[in-house]
Image 1 (cartoon, helix red, strand yellow):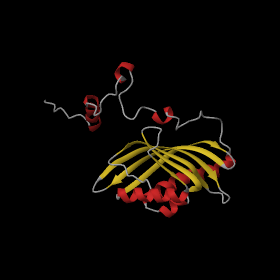
Image 2: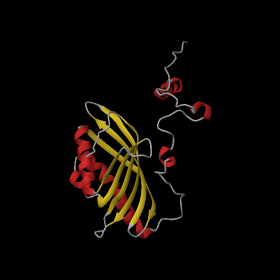
Image 3: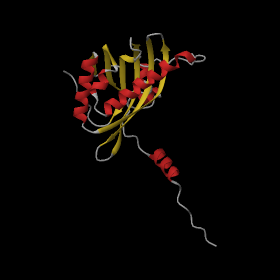
Image 4: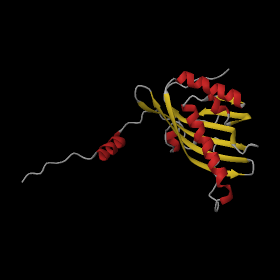
Length: 208
């Protein structure tokens, strides 16, 4: 009786490829000597550059503030959907009048900065016009570390898919935000830092 050897399952093949693949990046000077992984961006770059300040887990959540927590999560979600649907009118409502938007690429220093809800919406609209493709922002892992009566601090992760004659992963993102509760009860971004780990393709330029 002869036995036919079956090929390894797909998961095993992918694992073998991952173990034998050659990294597609050059090691930064001194990385090997220091024993650090030679990756770009640096591991935990947003924390090391002071942009992400994750707090330890503390006790139970105040049940009377669950509504505020849900509204803050919705602000993040509405930002992603409004961007993808080119609704700059909606984007403008998500920021305070004097809000600050900063966009960075693998480091704490931003390469784009916008001030004020009107300017932020205009700059985001300019970025959308340059991209010209269909993006979908998947925003999750929302952590609200500080929640006061009218001010809050929150973190979130984002993955952006890009559909343009095919489908690719466009970016992975970390968000760090300060939000203010308005007189209408809505939570808006007073400061939003968008930290891009990697951006596929050419980044748009939105300077005035």
